[in-house]
Length: 342
Image (cartoon, rainbow, N blue to C red):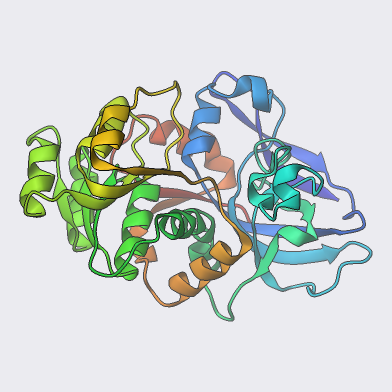
């Protein structure tokens, strides 16, 4: 079968090509991809930051939704035509992390759509164990938000956010906003620190208290908003050194800090602050299967205003234009590619 696919060729370039797609192998499912969101990692790939890992002939993409089009031998529990999303993690099953029950952070983890072929193509073969069936009636464009929402669910679970706690989210991009929504759903009083006026305005429309470090001292403002206590939980989602500086300075005594962002270089962390305030630092990477289940539940319950969160949808033929528009564009929240043709 022939599938149209966007292929990353380096130098900020995608080419739209026809690929011969084989039948799904035993244990695989073939998906007709409907929608695929553009992730921050996808943008890093487009900008050439991950060429050594990705190469110049890969179809990327992982924030997707679609329908089952074929089943490989031995696959049970799914049927052709069923609406699904993919949890894009392929683990080895043999390393210490896998044996300890932490398959999502397998020592040999392959991230599908980065380390292997991804979802910016019409037909996509994936391991059956990565699939999650969607609730009846869920919009497939909205369902493509489940992957980033599952990231937020995992982050908030790692932080053990409790009702009544003050939560500071540093960085109001797509993941930061989703973390804020999930933390609020858990009962947290959420503050978002962000420098983009557009994202600040959107966060305010969602009902969040905001801080702009360009106009006020974010530590002083956090203290002012918390009666000089600081934030019980801090999520570092900005991926910047000022964000890392803020996460320790704004944390309350025995506060919990969750490192969400991937930093391009090793940041400097104020360990003195950890000593003085007995802070705790948690890493949070990707998601477990139950985080996907929670994300589907929250999306189905309307916790995310999908219609405003999805900034724009472009067809697969316009993927180059979509990525170029996102480069340095602070106005976008979530840009999405429509893969399936009408």
